[in-house]
Length: 558
Image 1 (cartoon, rainbow, N blue to C red):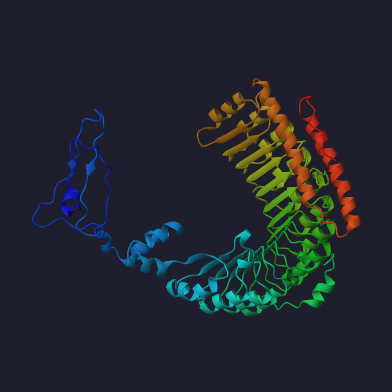
Image 2: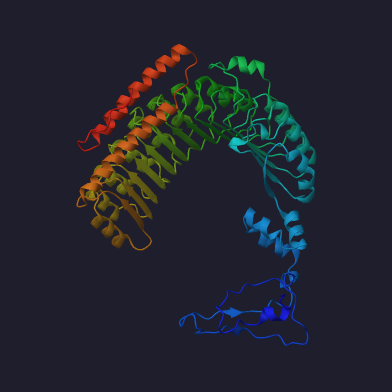
């Protein structure tokens, strides 16, 4: 038996259990017959035979009309702009008008780049005509089903060439140099290109620079089609001729075992402002000399886990406008290289140094920074051991120093904190981790650093919670301080966890060193690598035994 439309608006009988009501759109539910009056919200039966404490529920009729039809398309587009891509896709299924508004105002589009994308591309880009940012992603397990050269050519033919400004390619393992060239030729207005986990080589970027004269930002990560340069940069320069990239402003090279192939590309960008070279193999002293000679206008430079020494840092002296410098785990850099940078780069504002506990960068380098970089605003020291000598000069000469982080600095104690409180009047944020400071040093912050608004302490076991509360009361409500330590009165499990945490940090550091090692190229190298792994296992076992509170762990397998 079917139900009449009017019966849908009636409340259930007293003997039937209450049912949950849901709102339905006017299109999904026909209006009640005109001869019947629109009922008011009726309360369902309470206290039925089934239960005596059931909460009342209400049944509402559908609205007489769709009030969203009164919204202009511009207002509806603003609403869609605040939604996630999944929510926008769901809203596009509500009605034809919402689908059209979504299609004509969606600027970002992320597609699963499978082999069949070339056939669906014409219909997709005929619908989404306002796309300016496109991402083509292929899952790791796609294999041969990912987008290839033929599919890329079909996608290129359907792209909105005059509007697309950003293109991101991820995991396209079937795409070769010609496939990337076809995509680049279809987007002459491209300004940002990001590629990762693809198989084409550096020659493909020659076509990119030729077809995209407005390209400003280039990011290259984990390419699989790079040749083995064996540290030779001159041969690559003679083999690959990159056209001048006059508009290129930012380049990022990350996790490339032959990143030296891109040195000619970077050197062909005279207007380059930002350069990031992260976890790339090869010797970088000579390439940095070539890059800084061709792009002296560098403002930001990030070097992480690179084989670079003082010679490479001395090459940075040609970049007189350098403002941001990150040196992360570059163990060959010493005070001499820092001094050469500080003597020429007087506009330095941000300096991050991760010394990796090698003790090769210390007071002498930091004192040169204090003398040569008066505009320094942010200083981060990890695994570096400054003393009162360098911190006093930093406070006296760097009057704009606002942010300071000291992590794993074994020489930073109460005397250093007292020096900071007396000298750093502009300091606003202070972060310390694993430093041997106590309440005596922290109490000096009550008398100094008038601009200080935030302090973060971690693993500073000499600082008590009473001192933290005293600082909060003295400095007022606008002052924020956080403390993360293992208290002495905690149970023995807490100290055991702390020891395991320290041991885990040591093991993580060794794992990072192992990740940075080059892979063996022959059987002899593989044999020596196995010996190195066995030695590393012994070191890890010794560390675990040291922090296991007398309980020796299982020996490592040989």
